[in-house]
Length: 463
Image 1 (cartoon, rainbow, N blue to C red):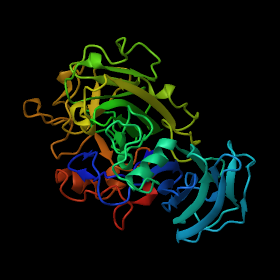
Image 2 (image 1 turned 90 degrees about the vertical axis):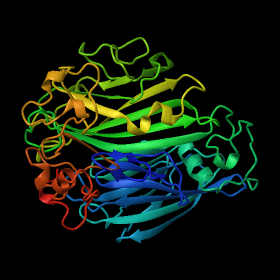
Image 3 (image 1 turned 120 degrees about the vertical axis):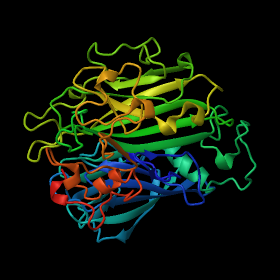
């Protein structure tokens, strides 16, 4: 799970849409460890002597219970002999630690590096934030960070491209000549995430969380946990702003459903589908038909099936309804499916692909023609249109009104951060207390309804 803090301005109308733009604020990258922990690359500074000073911030949101346990140690991966000048600064809360272990061996951790051991006063109901600063010698390297809590390692991975992106976009590299273009690709080094790769220039991120009700067109129990998926699109563009490739990561957090549901997404523009190809789908049956390029057949717009059966992605723990929705049932580690999408070179910008307005959907209980989309997002070409306007659905196809009740209540939601989903059979309206006002106002009121603010939620109803 991860959230990239870049330039994304959350703008919820009835769903959240994202823009790939830059602001004057510092560029950071945040990824979600789990159990309420997130890690942020705050800064990367090239010291101009073959070393880099890196600042990471670990934050806990204050959640409590078996799925939000206290931090036991904080480990950072680094190659032996490359790290030094390690320090920590408590930004909020009362983070403590017993010892700083310099490694390289870190015991049970699946990597080498250094760690703050026997940590305290963060997690399990105690919010807090701590900055870890250190120096890396030699080139930047991929680094993992483990926020160990209970038996969960809660690992996030930062790539060299992640560190480079923060450094170059904050102008903290060693290059003092902002017009220098080392690789000659027309993208100056100060703005080039790949200064030594003439084919690549920038990295763009789009992230968020999706949650679905699968009993559409009936209202159902309205707990919005039948499918909960976090996503990250990482798109690489060249100096002409043309897309080279896209990595699409989808992490299934929970599904409170007995149905075997599939998940996919469609791009909004009817571009030439022969210009795209995709790998990495998790297909376990014969419900969907894919072409040789990996896209779904018989679609008017590019359509990608991520998986066809949620139960093939995460194993049911043996008790409870679905996975990670029933209190007391064993917790199952979220699973990630990664699609790698190739784009015909020098053909499409991000705007032309329409990724900012992608159309994600589930299809219900192995019936491909029974789709559930975000409110007012059109179905794909394979939809059974006769379902609209039945039961509690108030769609009006002629007016491009889809997947809402008479009061504008949707069956799917998208938010720009982690979603704390309700327990099984607990109505979202009784959990996120501003949700109803937001939906019925057509997204004009309480656009931050999903946040943990005073009066916004009944924490007893959250899984």
